[in-house]
Image (cartoon, rainbow, N blue to C red; front, side, top):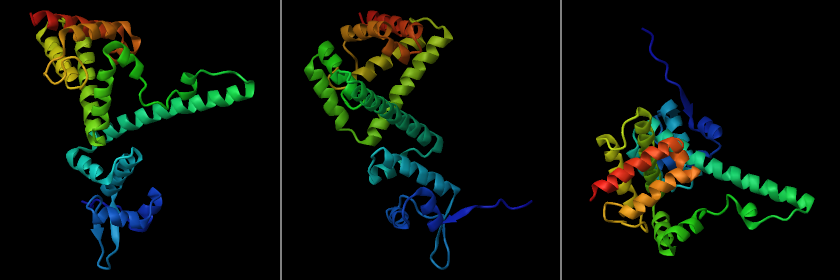
Length: 258
């Protein structure tokens, strides 16, 4: 049986492919972030395919603004390469969508400059404001609610934000899957999801019931209606039909609280 051929690249070749310097790769080696796959008798570093894939992940996290120590912690925590790539896909997709909005905003301004058309501030700044939903949150639940949640979000590390997004996305995916099966909103499986939803909401500072392990019942009922009435929220649950399933499950959950 022929031995499997192992492809390796020199530090110079890898640096050129990645658009970084060999000094950068040596630094990554020194801090234990990206050790070479092998070192020749003459001290020359070589990198195999797994090392190249790890470098891709490192550079992607750097593109997201994550510090090197946090990257190391993330890669150590997410030992499954597929899970790491999925998190990166999610984070980069969000960035791309935001940049697309920014690009569209700039193009609107350029077009308006030529036509002398007047634009509203919302049109000019679309995509640039990280507090997109600030006014809506403050109007619905008060300024303290927004301030608390904003401080909480800003205080997270990038690793913590990625983990929180992953947990949130999993909850949404589980809701959509449950709705697709056709189970009743009052079923044990649906009620388990409703309880998870309540705990998830209470984990966000500033929300009614925050820190208690369960969302405030009236707040939960209000959100249940919002999931159906607002197409932005409904889309998270696969459309209005899926959102209606979530609403009925949450209503049953609150009714069961007595």
